[in-house]
Length: 106
Length: 106
Image (cartoon, rainbow over all chains, first blue to last red; front, side, top):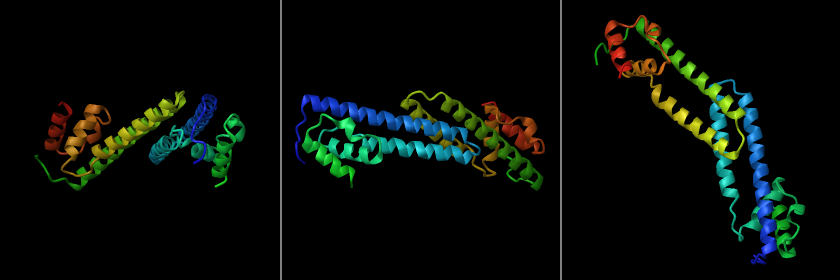
């Protein structure tokens, strides 16, 4: 892992990007749950919804781990999944950006 | 426990009442979940909904235990909770009805 130190301005960029991706992802879950609720016809649909919520909660808890040592990996994944773009990370050092880009392409 | 034997006609009455109460309860959960989904504003509302669903699923699994030895207790509870009335149990022997009534008043 290169560039382990984060400057104050990098920390601000990182926090903003992290929160933005998390909010987008949570908004998409809220939208999906509203749709699922409209489609509830049978009791089994309730338990599918419960399972969906549990899976999303666990995934969000695992993924959004705000430790500086983990952030490049998280940002790479978030770009790969479409929750962030490289533009959201303007202001990070080029070493970090290169590393994030590598992860994003995995 | 009195009257442990159930005649064929009592079994039909019991099955119909059991299924009716379960369906009513599941319908009420479906209605509640649709309401909760309309009221989702924040991510925390998602996890409240997940918790509500898990609790209801566990409660339903525990409560609806179709063993003849348990049915009087279950029917008593379902009357107490308003999912059944005594009229739904017409056809059961008077010993069972008395016992169910006792449980319902607990």
